[in-house]
Image (tube, rainbow, N blue to C red):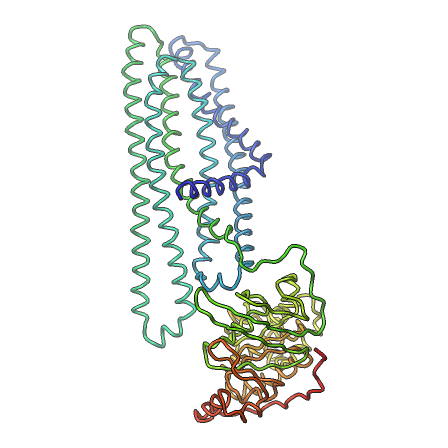
Length: 600
């Protein structure tokens, strides 16, 4: 198991490196700039000897004129190099982060509905925002600084060996010891960073839930409890952040102490060589300056390694999503479903969530243009049945056919193009009314959009808005009433003009007046379409050509309203139960004539 985990991690790190390598030209230019910075740093240390020996001790006037000019040129080139490497590496880093963020969002969108049922929205948002931002710091900042510091270390090592190779060998004895804390602290910071990122994701999920449910929180007087829960989450994050801070804070003093040991040795041994005449003061101070400059980037590498480890921990969380396979597969070369009327058939269909069977041995044929109503007690499997048609889930056993073609054998996009859905939850976006209606058909003309709105009985209230069809409707349509939101959803389905229609309790949450308007809009929507209607109130489905009753995942009754009532079975019990509960019967729709049915 350990070897497998290592292989997975290595594969992920290689993927990040491959993304970096795609920008090889800018990387090469950035490395050239880093070399300029490293060379200028080494040159600064190198000039200490001629400054001391030639200017101060030998009083060489010519060198006094040359060296200041050389210093100005060195620092000018250093500034250009720093700007170039900073800009180029940030460009590379931001490009890679954009690629990863795009890939993450695209892959999440392609994952099945079951994935979203298991994952929390706030956690997914944290992967795209917080985790990717941490990775950005690694790629654009830590990686850049690590390369620059490595080049600087190489340049300075060259200077100290050139000045005094014997003293350099002694000085570098401490260097391997200095790298040990980098590795040690890096492993610790990666573990803690993973915990911090998970805690941040938990907090984002909590915030999303409590902000979306703020009305319920206020209605039940739970503000105090929710505040306490939030404080507990921030306390957990605080403890983890402090552990990470402790590791970061400890790494620098350890590096400082090890560096101090090396410098103390150099002062003692190097000073002895100057006193005995083996070396000159200029050589010693040039050597000393290079060593002091050398320990600084080595010390920085510890902090940079911490950032890199945090980034790798974030990369693991990102790739956990990107590498997750969808269980809704599409066959290579699958054909498209041609546009036009369609029949739908369920043949020996079984379905289960995990280990619980939800649908059992469903056999059902719905002709083109037929209106099928699906009723039953909550939890019986009604919504699951219709969710199998657009392949939000795949059947566990059996098959679903559209015009005698298994829906698993056709292109998924073309399958869903044939289906329009209106659900109990009016899912709208914080865009204009026009954009929401045209969501399934972005190229629709203004006239077509308004025609759909009129057919959905929405045009009248839309034109009363200050900006009409350009009015933004708020998050999830929060500025609209329930009936207005539902009519916009129906207008959206009308404009899509799909031959198969699914209505999942589209009127159950509405008042009687709104329901009557929505029912009229639904009548327009159903015309000529193969329609599946899940209804809570049985009085609203008397227009259906056929009604099926689902109980415990099975179809237990099937027929018209009149024939099912005559059976005095499950349907009759449900109907009588609703009447005894005092449910008002809204104005019903006329039942379509059987002549409107298209041949199967």
